[in-house]
Image 1 (cartoon, helix red, strand yellow):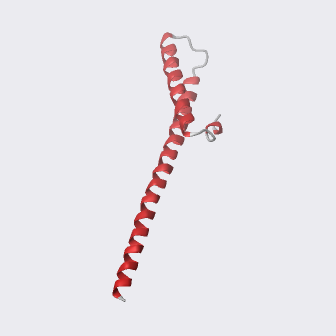
Image 2 (cartoon, helix red, strand yellow; image 1 turned 90 degrees about the vertical axis):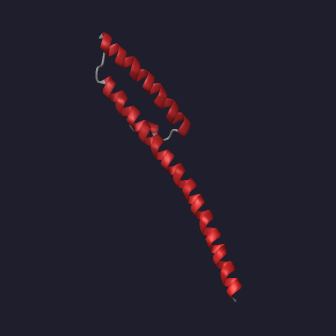
Image 3 (tube, one colour; image 1 turned 120 degrees about the horizontal axis):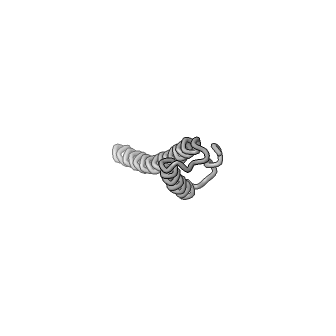
Length: 91
């Protein structure tokens, strides 16, 4: 179960996280009432939600890095063209 989340897409990860959060809330209510077959299930769900949050955060960072890289590449090419113009004018 640990590695089964890695091959999910971003929307699938978010949907799975929301689903597990709902199940976790239901499990918490059942624990208060006292009708839980496996009390360790609460810890397992909490850890699965944390894994999903980590994968979602990593994809957010990757997308932000790509966007920043595109901006940096655009700024870098603008800087190079400005330097070429200055060197052409100096000749």
